[in-house]
Length: 233
Image 1 (cartoon, rainbow, N blue to C red):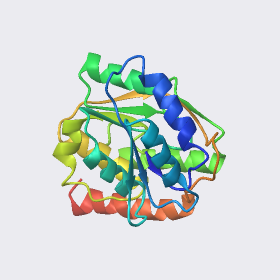
Image 2: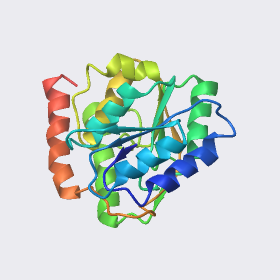
Image 3: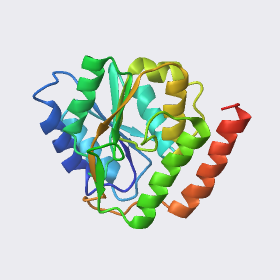
Image 4: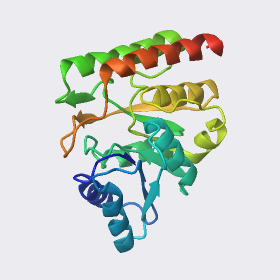
C-alpha cells in the first residue's frame, strides 16, 4: 500500500485487512510504502509494526509517484501472491479473497478488481473523474489492445512470477500509466488476466485525493503514445 498523508486511515485499513485475511491465511504480510508523509503516517505504521510483526514499513527517500511506490513494495514483498490496495479505504479487503480464489481455482496470473465489468461500480466519484477514468481505459484498449476493461485500477492481485518476469521492462512511475503498463506487459508476455467485479467507494476515509485529472490526462496521453509507437505496440 503506497501512502502519503494517510494517518487517519492506516490503522482502520490494517484492521480491515486482518479481519478479512486472518480466517483464511496463516501467513501474510502487510507492507506500507510511505513517501515520508508529513502528517505522521510513517510513525503510526511503525507503532503498528511493533505490535504486529506481519506489518512492515518501507520509507522512500523521495516522492516519485504511486507506480514507483508499488514497485518498491513488490521488490520487498516475500509472498507467492502480491496484492495492492488503496490506503484511502475505497476498497473492501474482503475482495482480496475473491481475487485469491480466481488465481487458485482458475489458473489466473493477474486478477484486477474491476469497476467496469458487470456487477462492478463506483460510489461517490465525481462525473469528471468517472469520465476521465473510463476514457483512459478506453484509450488503453484502443491504443494497446489491453484485454481488460479496468486496466487503470490499482486494486489487484498477481503471482510473484509476474512481477519477476516484468520488473526490468517496467518504466512508468505515475498513475495510471504504471497500472496500464503492468497490465499491457503481462498480457504481452502470455500471462492469464481476469477481472472480478468490485464496488469502489470514493475515499470514505480521512484525507484528500492526490489525483489531478488534468495533469494525469496529458501525462497519460504521452505515455500511451510512447508505449504504442516507440515500442511498436
